[in-house]
Length: 170
Image (cartoon, rainbow, N blue to C red):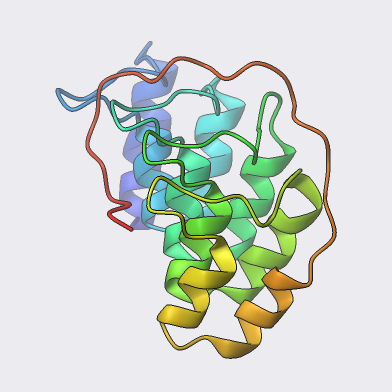
């Protein structure tokens, strides 16, 4: 996201814009900041009260989108936010780790692994993150994912999916 867009967003937030406002498809500005791999925009929204737990109609959170975008710093900031949970699957059973595997994002996967209770979790197609990485030609990442120990326990009950646009068609 361009610096000018961050400045406009900061001004709008000061004027009362809601950081958790949703688009017609259910995404929040935090989803977009994560997708565009902009850690400064992500931090601006989080400091304004953006909710990291919000999910779209496909059950995807900003953390799912950050994993897909492959930016470790954006992912790190989202993971540090209150309520961040790497164990929440989308409606197809994909964890954020599946998205990192899909894009071959080793750095993001390394951040997610300690926060993922079951790194070999299967999605609705029966694929683990390691399977996806291998299918996409990321053999070293597949080995890392296949050999990963169990990570953090689940952060609690899953939030109900909300309305939105899905990007994880894996």
